[in-house]
Length: 416
View (cartoon, rainbow, N blue to C red):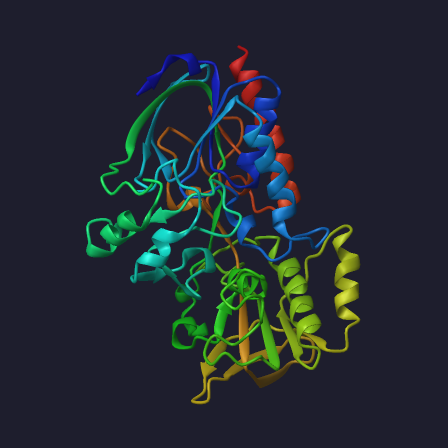
């Protein structure tokens, strides 16, 4: 469809913190906004955190405020399970094609969950980074917006799909859903598609795929989250036991010309934060942070000092060279202590890789003539306005600020 009434609208691509901030600021300034998100829910990766800086509060606190602002603002239209397929034109006069993929559940859904109860098939849960299975008829997470179930395409044409259809008392399951192709005329485009954790299987010497007890920093967030795969109990995925000796490996693939050559800026703080998860829940446990250098600027340095004062947390200046799984499920780390010059082997029962941020624009280019730096980050001062972690690695607060800045640029373009 083509909506000519939206010709002075602003399109925001990406429903994470940067995109939400851009959309809300533009809408509350009086502009129509179309918000497009590829996931079945808004909130981006922040929704998957246990806590975030600087207040160490649950992400739902800030997200729910934003969701309420969206619900109460008629100037915002949002589309989930949707991706931009083409952008043509110029600032002030863009034509954007959007493909909205089928959800197989329509707006009649009340979130009752009867469709999920009826099906037997399961899929790997993407919200928990594969740490758990979920029914193939599912709600993405407890506070998802929209609060609407999704039928996985793998069962849409199966007996399980029919069971979901028959179980729904509201006629919300639509197995004939084909999705839809949308076209919008807009005056400005903000691109805020976020980031993807760097693939740890590419760091061959860490043997990530050889042991379930080697996890990433984003997986640790889900383990600690109360609605996560273990209801917040920090456990070794390999055997469900509480870890006693945890290693955090900083710059896992980052600052490495063979992987991610740049610093993602947030990984040190993430590991410091996650060490507090472990120590508060498992006070008898020990944590070792292996680092090249700790980057905790400004007020975050106080947090680093606090963590460093914990006798249960040790810091070893070392770039770990090899991780070897043992038959018992533990991991042997080999490296050199660059402070003492001593080579060492250390055994841990859980290893957390602090993998970096890869901008999604490095993995999926914008369908428009846009310039990028050597790492795939969007450069500034272009027709398409980059926001958040597609411009540079950023923490949550910076993403909110960057989304606001992008909204101002979009408003300026729309008023020309």
